[in-house]
Amino acid sequence: FIQLDTCWPPVSTMSVKVNSAFASVLLAFGLLLPCQLGLPTTTNQGDRLIVFVPTRQAQLDWLELIHSQAGKPGEVGENVRFWFGPGLLNQETIVFVPGGDYGRLVAAIPSSQDTYSWWTVQKENLGKLVTGETRRSSDISSAYRTYQEIGDDLPSKRIVWIDAGIHAREWIAPATALYFIDKIVQGYKSSDSTIKSMLDNFAFYIAPLLNPDGYVYSYTFTRERLWRKTRSAQAGGCYGVDLNRNFGYHWGGQGSSSDPCDENFRGSSAFSEPETRAVRDKLLAIRLRTISFITMHSYGQDWMVPYGYAYNVSVDNYAQMMRPVQAAADKLKSLGRNYDIGNSAVVTYPAAGASDDYAASIGVPYAHTIELPDTGQYRFLLPQSEIPRVGLETLEALKVYLGYIAAANQPRDE
Ligand SMILES: [Zn+2]
Image 1 (cartoon, protein in one colour):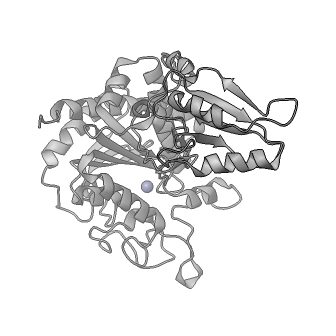
Image 2 (cartoon, helix red, strand yellow):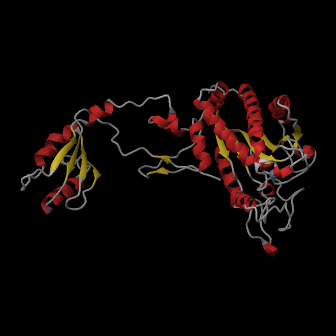
Image 3 (cartoon, protein in one colour):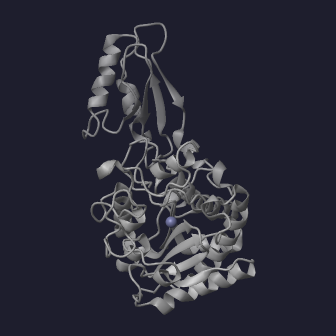
């Protein structure tokens, strides 16, 4: 699970959250966003850069003196900013001088005892450069972007959570999550109106691989392609926890096992695993803004709603939650794919400690487990050639589903 809370270089502390198509990719692949560079916030006409190359100790001492005067009222160095240095003899020191301080600083520079000058004005007029900068471009990858464009997380946007790969062997799930990311980025760039409105309506938090250790183990063919759990060491010499039995809502109930060697081992306690704790902590942090929680599995072709911890327990808003699901299922059917929909215990089997139950229990209005194709021909071994079809039909279904939710849940005017 990927947190995106830091930036580089560490000039300032900036919490970066994610909502645009562009930034969704960053979330998915764990890249860091750059901080603002150390440019002055106000650059006026007459601002200059001076490059010093001290060749004598007295010159270096003077630079150190100016450096030490930063912020001291009335001193020559009060408003001078050192972008580089002062360092050693014969090394460049670069300082930014506001227009109003330029004359005073220049007058104070010790004169060179050599035949050559030890300083030069590098940019005669920085302010002119700044005001002349062009920052606009329609292509996201070839222009400097504003903070909002790069990743401001507008509080008015509701969050759609999508995760995949909580079970290692269900490879079509992370593949579909990546397909989704790829297509919404492309769609946004090419001004696809449905995708654009989707991204204007919702902020997407996408975790394409919730169980990386298990996935790596499954992906290594000499090991176990059909491995399901994590790879944490457990009592009795067995490995792994079924993360989708480890969440803390009715943990320990039906469909989960206390046996560390069992496929459905629920862990030693609720949230005993770092993967589930990461999901819990992020979900709790964004809980009030999260409108939809979707976790993608395979196989079965089911689109389900909580609760799954036992038979005959449904969320209070079951009927409301089912409406966009029905719309999505209708879309899938029109694309030649039949999905079963409904309460997850009924559609499949009771499974206590699952993530969608937890999401519903903390108040997320729509929570789903989606079992991607197929229905049993290939089971977990769905051929790679099926990725485009599954990806496309899931994307189309999610468009319909989210369009329905957007229409039914207009933001309230405060
Ligand atoms: Zn699964």
